[in-house]
Length: 368
Image (cartoon, rainbow, N blue to C red; front, top):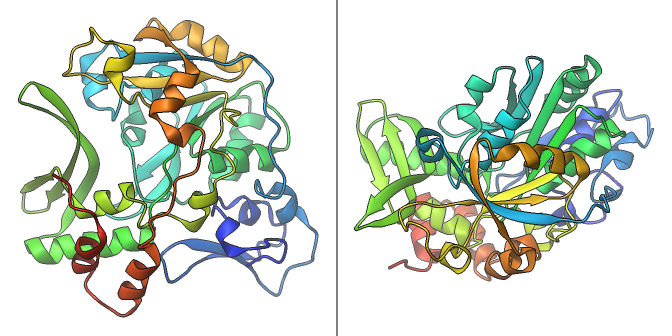
């Protein structure tokens, strides 16, 4: 670990320290829980730049613009179906659209690795849609963001609050042509555990996994089920599971990064220009709404975000909602996720070599 990080569990793994290092001596190494942490090599010159950009050590100042909040659903059904919630990310990209644009988001690099990447055509953003519950690797993105901004491109960066804070600290200035979107974040799952789980699925089904989708929408008995995992295999089979054990372990805070249990960004003062997430308990806000649909929460945090919001009604059906009420039904907006008391035991079992499926099944609480 880098010397200025007082405790390992405080590190979010955003990678800003690695990106800013002038001697490229910082590596992100995988620990026994499957998360990466920074370590400095012998080429370190003690310049202190890694400490300067660390969003845990140096907090990002937040805008004092009066916040407001809406619920929204994309008015294009195909876009809505391709999204986890209401399609807010897609609509924001459309509202921000420009011939010279670069859009950064999390995507599946392959069957088990999630990375941040960029596209320069809005028609290519499908890879960034839908939630990914394995932490994304940010390597290479920081310098690309700065390069595009200096070239005058309009840039959208979407990520977890700690990633957004890392980007802002790395850039060290507020670019007019940058729009940051942070997520209402439950936490990030272990990339190492996800890789083990994909390997288990391949062995159990005797076929290579082509893709894994965490939350696929299905209408079941007149109600929307938005928590079905969808695994596609190379032999053409598709496995759908409403009680997937990796997803349940994630939701039940068994495999989250340690820093997620004491997240400093889980508060209404946000680091993004816009904040997006699920609209939980939809009927409390939109009692007349069709139960076969779902909506996004969109929080406006800055004047830049407000400018985009004023264009969103072209792409979304929008409804004003109360921010305090949103926090009531989505606690991740205002407080960090409480770690499962059985988390440590789970990782002990994994270190002892027990099969990943047996360990996850042992510790998750059964879902009816």
